[in-house]
Picture 1: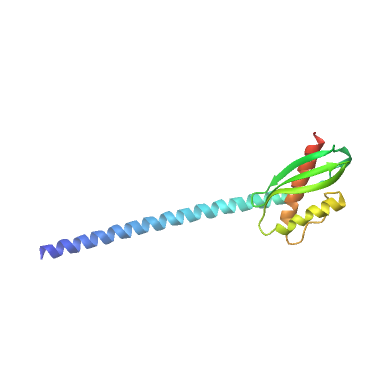
Picture 2: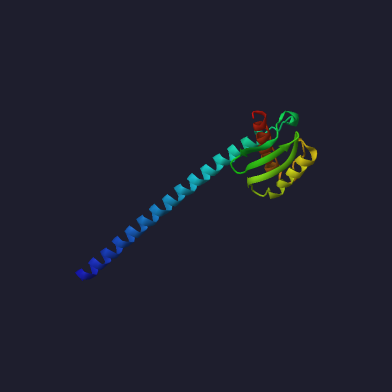
Length: 149
């Protein structure tokens, strides 16, 4: 009989330990989930702020010497790095070196628009507006680096 009591007490003790461990794991998982959710929300707000702050200004190509110029722009969730080749005060080529995007891969068509127009003042690509803006800003930064050369 005493053996039965010990076995019953051990079983209750084991259950108690399992319950405590389970509760601790759930609390840690909830805390981690809240941390990651808060981090994501902060990044999302910063992303929206950076996108809203993008202002594309045209660069006077007549003031840019021949050469290859690299520029980038990072809006957290979308980023781009480009190389712009200038010859005889005209954009001869634009290479996308890096383009982190959400669903904005089609924004890369803006490169052809800029080359055709010889201007950064082109329409963004519908459905990929934010990626278009980031690519244009990277191109502007590249060209502006040529003004300092």
